[in-house]
Image: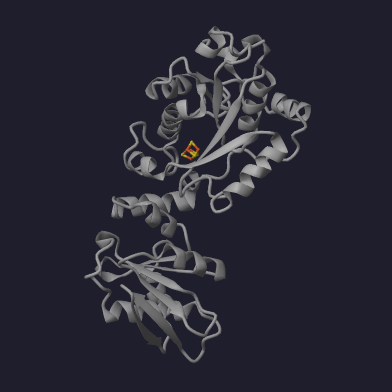
Amino acid sequence: MPGHGQPGCLVLYSGGLDSILACRVLQEQGIRVTAVRFITPFFGQEVAGREDEFKRSVWEKYSIRLEIIDITDDYLPMLRNPPHGYGKNFNPCIDCKILMVQKALELLPAYHAGFIATGEVIGQRPMSQRRDTLNCITNDSNAAGLLLRPLCARSLKPTIPEQKGWVARESLPHISGRGRKIQIELAEKYGITDYPNPGGGCVLADPIQGRRLRRYFSRWPAMDGNDCYLALTGRQFHLRGGWWLVIGRDKRENKRLSSLCRKGDMFLDSRNAPAPSGILRNPGQAGQLDISPSEETVSLSASIILHYCRKCSDGLELLTTWGGVKGSVIAEQAASAETVARFALDE
Ligand code: SF4
């Protein structure tokens, strides 16, 4: 068995059963495990805004110490141009994994860890978990010898932690392929009953949202994190002059829009009526206060908002805020279905 005083391990934690098991099989060998959940606007959003609660629940349910780290700034340049290309949608899975391993490598000293582990299983997914893909991830992230896949390590070349005896290779499970039987048995053994289904959770791999993001990135290559959050919220319209209108579909999205509003945006807020709020943004002019939307753009936006307001038969007055200046706009007539369809980005 591994001895005391040996380096700990940083486990890439997706929240799925396999990453939970990767943590548990290493813990069972006496290894100090820190799990790290990387988040971006595209995945990990289930924890955003409730990080402490989530970490506590992972600790209580699985006895796993979790760190949550936002890697958006490193992720976006890779997403714009992933060396290994995209999967079926806008998902750059191989480069996404390489980036995560690289980030974990950088974090090793901070967590007094000597190696990295993931819950990957050889042969489980047709593309991203083939032997050659696993090798490519290891090599391209410069993690050779330091990246252990504890669930299938016995089918792979021994890594440094195994060679040095920090990890007892022969005691690791021996999983491969698509079946889930061994994982389910292990979950039972560790008393893990409550875990998310595998697969879901990444909007880049989603056919609708992934396609939307792909279009946005080709239209506005400099999209930043806030733009990505905005692209994933509410109803989306592209107006003349490069203006992008996003309107909320419910109270929660209205609140979200108000939190995403930034310098250079116009925020449209219904004063009295229970109507959608909206943001008008010109992504090409981010942060420039001297470019305001034209009156025509603002009235068109208000009429589109009115189109979605069921309880505003007498029209709608919206409060506008742009660059700290407050104003208002009145929409007397709702935009027609044809007008809405003409400007809608993907409805
Ligand atoms: S599905 Fe999304 S999070 Fe998962 S590897 Fe692919 S791009 Fe990364």
